[in-house]
Image (cartoon, rainbow, N blue to C red; front, side, top):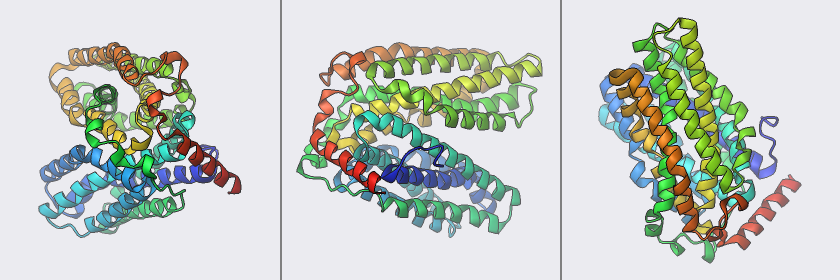
Length: 434
């Protein structure tokens, strides 16, 4: 872990928190559908509807979840979210009917997403603005490694296919989250002073920050690439090609490896807003090309088809890495310093389009429009590239920012800068002592 994440002190602890939380999430997300059908005995259709509701119910609460982090402090809020997840995962082992299932998974959906929002606010509290992108890249690498390990653990449980294995899957997820929560207690504590109180920035101001919301929506449109990877390509392989059905899983694994390997080195262009704009355009172009590569994988010899899909996944991985780095810069630096959690909730809300629209759009492309559908989706990604430039100019202009190529942060975010400098010095002091 230390070689992969060259951080120290509190930041290394935060990376381990992220790593453990992602193991728990990977176990739960990879095995929950099978657990509730095979172990609990619920019909597949009911489980599908319940998990869909759980994946969306947090959306209207995202801003309030972020505001909670601003009001009580990000560390405390993260601990609350973690404790709630542990209790709900334990409760999941006692689910026997539909009503209990819907309640438990819906609340889990809220607190899991709340945990991610609060951990992002924690980064804003612990790290100065110039280092947030690089630190977030390391945290993302830890997250992806944890997801892989969690998915492997879930795969083992599903292979054993017995009651102890399924119970172990859910309780193992709870144990990983509990460990992450305990470690989180050791992170530096921030008490919000009068200048950092969340009510100093009314929540309606966050909702009305249309330029910020617009950029988050564009980011969410790029994230549809993840739906292409998880749903579109496997469906394409199964329904419209003669390629091996297991190829989709191998390609998903390839994506995970590429993202872990490339996230840190390819995030270095996001230090300035000019670099962010370039990365978003590159991500759009990569997603566009990936859709065209998928379209070309049908009706060709198997080896050519596999090659086209490998190229497509590589391009989607590049898009994911570039857009993630750009998203961190936008999410943190365009938000007021004293309301990072609230604006983070806004960004999570806008960027959730991939969850709301992605599955339906990608499924429609595969089932009805085939190659022409992929071409249309490619055109959609291309439009994102066109929209990014004026959208960024609008957002920067409304924050009285100078030339985007020459600045690394905008002036409106300087509220509370002195307190943040003191916080950074405190973190560095703790790192030296540790």
